[in-house]
Length: 433
Image 1 (tube, rainbow, N blue to C red):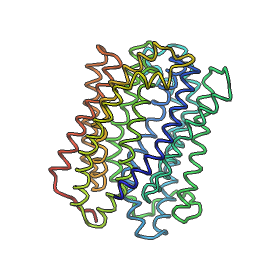
Image 2: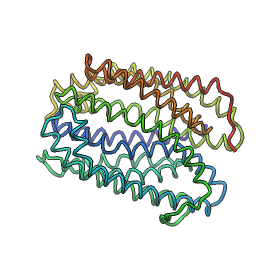
Image 3: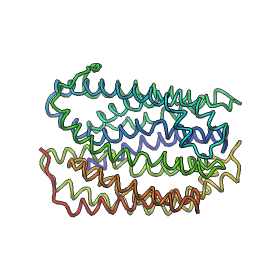
């Protein structure tokens, strides 16, 4: 019941957030269509922010169980750990920003494929904003984990801020087809999201502002870093899937990055409202059940939820497959986005939707293994997922184009679901101390 209650709250906030994202996509499609600017936007955002997103993905999974445990040890221990964590996350973020700026010309040279000269030039302009956004993503990740550990899910609503600011900036700059409405809207949205999340996390914990301290005195570092090391290996592999898809799409030319980007965002709406709501609500609950000594109950809950989510995913796939052309036309077809673009994006969307049942099913199993601290197994499965995805892209993309890339993602998630389900079902329960 705690998972259901949390999932309903997450879903409510995610629906609002996804609507904001849809409004942003409508504005981008109307202003830019399928163009070099959108190609550069999809490529630059994916490549520049993949490492910060990877770190947040790895640390949030291992950080939430630690924060759940710290809740029972008092605010002094928690604040000491959080102040040190914030300090080193800031240091890592600044380093990533500087390195991204320095190496970006080389990254474009070796990974941009058949992107046009204009798209490459736009990317060079965008990176001056998207690199600092990576630092904000890291800080946001800490405060989101704090709120999720308390089973507070309003942070999902704040995810919509970058999209809302992009929409607002486009509306307030009529006729401007440069990169700046997109990148400045992104920066403003992330800045406000960072500030509000920090304020809300402190308020939820009954704390004043927690300031960074550059030291390693908290005894909880060893547990976090050992777990995060394994998770980071797997997360780097998995999070590189999006940039890898951008690189394969760039080899196709003909604005393939833009077409795939529009389709991927619609797939993300379905995934975000369905699977993400349950997955985000489940981890703090499963971690708490594990901490209280009921590992068998946690396993039973996760297996039942996993199978139920596959069934829900099949229903979502059937409806979304039928509605794909209408949905693309409704959301995007106006201004510079033509009916020919609708046909291309709808075809890509249908192949992208095939991942939904397996993504739905695997997400809850990921939370179970995370609550049991089985990070080595999770890293191994993630590496195998990446290998499957790369192989499928290599085999399918040259012959089937964007459809092949999208199908490769579905195969990857099928393999992931089968692997996680076998591990969760067959391995004996593991009780945390």
